[in-house]
Length: 132
Image (cartoon, rainbow, N blue to C red; front, side, top):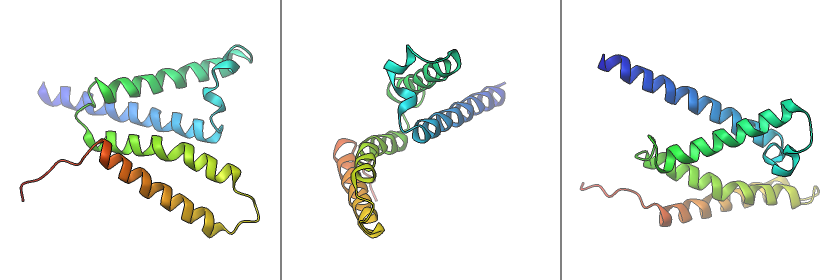
C-alpha cells in the first residue's frame, strides 16, 4: 500500500509539473497577455477559461512551494526565485534593445542578468552548508 501511495503522489507531482510547464509556455508565447486581468472581462468564454485556469495553476504552484508539499524542495525555490528575477529583465532587454545592435550584446546582457540573479538568489536563499 505504501508503494501505491508513493507512486500516486509521484504521478500527481509529475502531472502538476507538466501542466505548470505548459502554463509557463503559454504565458511566454502570449508575452504575458494570457495573465492580463483586465482582458478577462472581455473576450470569449474559451479565452476567459484559459486565463482563469492559468491563474489558478500559478496560485496553486505558489501555494505548493511556500506552504504545500513542495516547501522542502530548496532547489526548486532557488530556481523559481531566479526565474522570477530574470524574466522581467529579459523582457526589458529584448523588448527595448534596438534591432541593429549585434546579437552578442544581447547575449552579454542576458548572461550578466543571469549572474546577477544567481548572486541575488544566493543572498536570499543561501545554499545548505555541508560538513565536508
